[in-house]
Image (tube, rainbow, N blue to C red):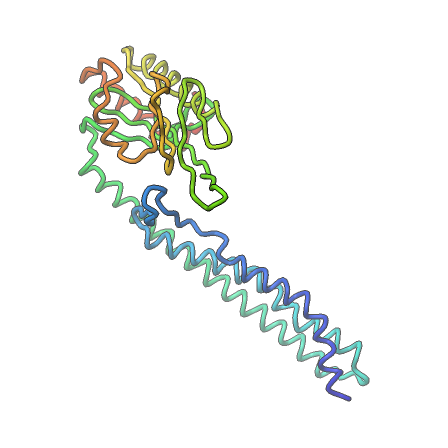
Length: 300
């Protein structure tokens, strides 16, 4: 039966087909879209539409880059199988397999170049949107405004998630994400009890988040006081998004909250005396450090 000579070589394509299925299943592995732990709504940033398109472009680049070698090898692998089972050697047929592989190589090279150009255009568009968004933020956060927020601030050997400057003081804000357990009935347990030196989660406890937040607040107070030559009131804030926080027995020098309504809570807190001159000097120091973020990412 001559048709078996064309059917049996398909066995050699099964490993390549399995790899292709895995690649397609993993195409959405890089997905930067996140949802709020407070209300599960998608979090949107400046240029979010371009961010989503950029994620899709990277997924396409991954798909073409991974499927290209698999598709290119398929005709050659099938041709080698045909050589094993064929009774007559037809060199024209083998040449066709080689030509098909060459065409596939050219096709996927074109697709990869197209993806590369598309990613470059999207990144340029995103950079432009972010630059304009940062300029527009000055409408609600000018340098002379009494409230100022800095993100990802370099500290001693680490980075602080957020530093908030209010008319009453400076707040070092750290965020910790912890998975909430479930009861056997499927009910979520999201209560965490704050003690002076530890956090008591359902089933385990942690000391490190409180210690780290306290250390960063102390470092920030010393660093700002050294540069401004003034005493700067600094308070550490630990946020646990998605958790119900019982902080009645918590430490007095730290604020531990879920993070919901955090802006209003910080606006109402006064960790110490903070005059206008000190306030402006602190903002100037932090602005200068933010400007050196890329040049000196980890320096004291």
